[in-house]
Image (tube, rainbow, N blue to C red; front, side, top):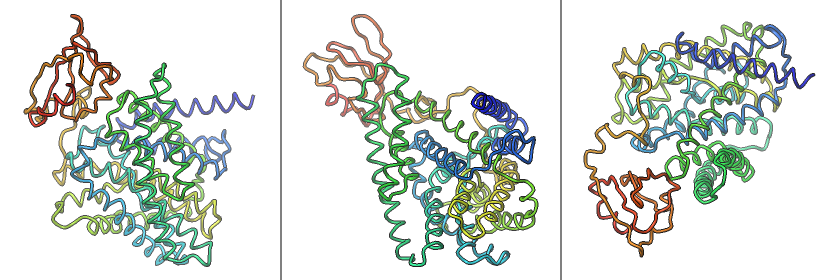
Length: 485
């Protein structure tokens, strides 16, 4: 009966999490908080019907969750949106994380008198942000950030975890190994980032090739293929000494940017996986949490949380972003949207597993910081955005907002409709639409074949004598004939 009992408990917690997510939109409370509360209530200091004390299991699930959340973040990122702010996002996710870690570590050393390295370790653990809760709050209040700001925050939150992971693991190694040096740490950073970027791109291209050319008989196998691919990418890159977290995010970006089959359905699938991972992770971390211990460090936690929100985060933003590249108001809002969420709590399990001195204190403090950040910053994002006049009305429910289908936003005013007949000698005959590698500003709208109308997908094969109706940007008119004739 043990198996059935576990299944019952898991199903109840997942269903309650779904209902709490819906309630969070109405209450204006980030759903992550409610997931944590469910875990705490189910744990040993709540109702007590689940006794969970495995730090290893929590870390294992946390890493697994972070891997899929990062891939989903990359896969659902629209490249056209992040291209203008790519440089700023990289600065925030590297320099910004480093400055946050150093500043917070110095403050921890000042008030707790922990050893310097342990103080910096706490700073590294809380140095990355999680904007997932921010956008759920804005959606519930029908407030949206200006497009460039929203894209910048999304990119930062999705790409700054690898830097935080590197700092955390690097500091743990220095603490445990007397012969560890700063030079070795720098080499490890260069290696992890380089391998993560290069191999992430390489494996991303392989995933796209697999999706386009496997020709699986059952469409349901494509999600299985991407699930296994993500785990493969993370594992192989990590074994080779690179940043597996960075690699899966880059692989997701490559998949998003490339032309591939089933992109829409696969994106939706991975959004669902991402939600499942977030729910599971926060429930498990809630089970691991001990409210009685958290209460004992409440004043310490409040002091560090306040420093992080009002000093360290703004300092990192203003140092990272060039003075004239972004306005003072925008920097202020970015500073306030520096929510701490999933990654810091996961990273807080690393010192516990490594049995670093003061690891339990670090874990309890980090948990309190995350709770404070989500409650205070998460619930006031909309107010601050309005106060700074950087908000814009969110699209009404049910409206089309994706880049793939948007056609009335002013970007297609130079599009022309063309009709082209495919001769028998055309090199496109026998190829699928996806294999033609059309630029993004050429779109096949309709195919007329033997008097029948076909709405094409990426898998649609081109036949001789097909009449193809296309939307083509005027700058790409000269590209059409070489691609099809």
